[in-house]
Amino acid sequence: MMAWPGLAGPRQSHIKMTAIATKIDSPKVLIRSRSFESLRNWIGVLPFFLFILAFLILPSTNLFVGAFQDQQGHYTLANIMSILSDADVLRSYAISLKVSIITSVIGGVMGFFIAYAITIGKAPTWLRNILMSFSGLAANFGGVPLAFAFIATLGHTGFLTGILRNICFPAAGGTQSCPFDIYQAGFNLYSVTGLTLAYLYFQFPLMVLTMTPALEGLKNEWREASENLGGSAPQYWWNVALPILWPSILGSAILLFASGFGAYATAEALTGGSIYLVTIQIGDQIRGDVLGNQNEGYALALGMVVIMAFCIVIYSILQRQTVRWIKS
Amino acid sequence: MKTKNFGWWALSWCIIALLYFFVPLYGTLDFSLREEKGKLSFLAYQNVLSDPQFLNSFRYSATMGIITIVVSILIFLPTVYWIYLRLPQARPIVEIITILPFVIPVIVFVFGLIRTFSHPPLPLTDTPFTTDLLMTAGYVILSMPYMYRAIDIGMRSIDVRTLTEAAQSLGSNWLQILFNVIVPNLRIALLSGALICFATVIGELILGDFLVRPALGPYMVVVGRDQAYEPAAMAMLAWGLTWICLGLIQFFSRGGTSQQLSGR
Image 1 (cartoon, rainbow over the protein chains, first blue to last red):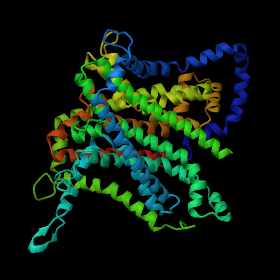
Image 2 (image 1 turned 90 degrees about the vertical axis):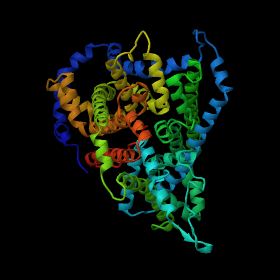
Image 3 (image 1 turned 180 degrees about the horizontal axis):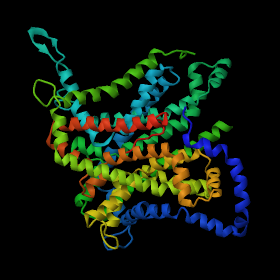
Image 4 (image 1 turned 60 degrees about the vertical axis):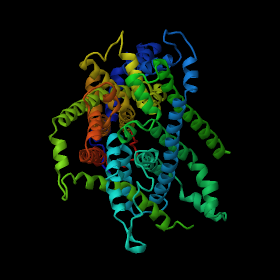
């Protein structure tokens, strides 16, 4: 481990210096009143709050207020009602939810077992290092390049498609049977299936990254205690490990859901917008007002945030209950 | 208990992970080298790297990345420093704010920016320069979770109060304390934050696309529609760039990659 290089000097000599500092500064500090001090303290973080207010809070609330206004600026619930009865909107929400739930469940299960393999499963250190490094890379490798990588691998003329196509068996009558043309078998990269495969490329590494510390936190003593009391492996997992891991697993799954639900670039680059995710629909709305009503577009965007906020509320409730359950 | 050693169950999950990582990577590499029929060549890479539009958009995104890094550090470093020194009660609320970009999908955030800043009183999207200002603000917000976390983690490991008192007693003013005392102690944290920030901006599609600026993301989408082998070459280049950024972070911090989370 490297020490913080610049730290050794000041830290060693700080005792003497604070002694001096107290002597010099204390009369001045005592004169200032407490309320003035605390007000001045808040001024120190004012630039941050102003920036956040201008470029995060204001644009977001502006959008959400727009969702409850008609084109003349009167408050109304008509936009919400209108998109809730719009078949296209409901379909796009259904596809988005389907893709993000499927990828977070599959990615979550894969990631959990891979994290298990490199921690409790005692994978050799070199393998663990490779898998952790690649998880860090793949979790950050999203967007347009990810779509390109999957087109190059599984597209019509892709690398893996070509290899699978060239695997042939001699069939009856001297002909060759090539059963692995995945496109003839119904596979299509430019579909929800393909999008799922591409999303999994960043989803399961994200799960590996978030679950590895949690699994490392499982103490050996707990397993030994369970064994000493006659518990079997499934009993240990069901009654000891899972209740402890449950908040981490759920929290990671929600993180996965969120990154799948909000993703736009991969879908746009992979399918040119032909899979109608909510994010793609919002993109079309920004470009050319496809709903024919700007305010319905804001309602469409509000729906995404409501779903995300709902997830976080559910997560915090469940987590609190789990903690309480562990305590008792 | 069964799992005393590295067993077949763990081994098979490791193999699945390795295959999922390496098959698309190798497939992309192989595909990117096949632009010339019947032999392997770097033609696709040459085409990408010699395209003036690629160079322009790369330069634009790299410049925006560096500006974003500078602005984020100027905003977040004094804020985090001040919170540690004088305002610990502000920490929970600032922490919630900094993870908001994870909760609000990027497309929704950009929608909000466009609605707010495309007409009076603040018509920022009218000229390229003011649009770039808006882009920078957007990038700073999008990379905020990483930059804030990096600085926060760095600040946690140093004794802010003692360092400040020591510097004050030697007669430093606030700027001197921040730049001569705090920054040198945080350089690794700042470097990690800066690299993730850069990687985020370089790969970002939505802001550049909808604010119609010549960033790398929109350029890549256009090339992806028209060409076959060049996109694969660009995917490899993007992979290499991510690798370099994360490799540098790991090299400097000698830590795991567990602090990074995905960002799209």
